[in-house]
Image (cartoon, rainbow, N blue to C red; front, top):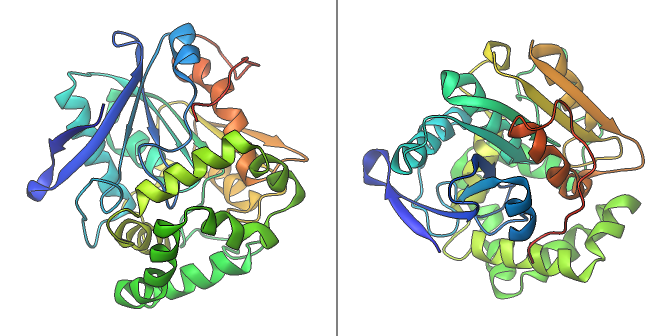
Length: 301
């Protein structure tokens, strides 16, 4: 069931809980575009692992109010508001794709409230020293982030028509990306259940506007508001070697920058391979395992 909480500036944030109500709390931060309904492990697996999974719509997505001008760092305050509402003193956090930088923000800025953090197929900061940020990135992402550098208004105009098409027919986003998907990603999205889940996610993400999508892109293209080097909690980075949406060089840079990070690289896997990785990472996030391990589980869809 979707709940709503009031954040700073009287903004409303929508969130949901799944799994064991008294279990180990884990925040799952969705991709870009995305929503609280994004890919998540099936409830049966969450119960088996003893996980209390919390998802929420970042500002401008789904049922959450927009927060124009937000930085990646601002995610930490929103997560803290939800955690306080739920009475959670400590919790783990994981982000996939566009959720990756936001998970790192929580790890850097929420002190010892965050026990462990994971970032799957994450971007690195746009101003990352020594990183060729666009190298290996697909043309559609380069165009999107280049537009973001020109300002929010410019990007909103670029995304609005696409967002309207996706809202009317969510399969549109997957279809538009298909020519750019490497073979490993095509195999993942060819699964009927995964595709249906992604379509539900995109439809909810853009139900009101393209604000969340635009604000994510602008936030990624500008200074994040924190230094990943300041993270002191254990961090797991995971990346598919064939990723063309957030190239593997981004996680390599993060691994060098974050003193507490360990890095898992997978050959023959690309961006959507992170969907399979998440269930295997949950035991590590909750401290039940010292490293990711195989877990039998399927996704809620």
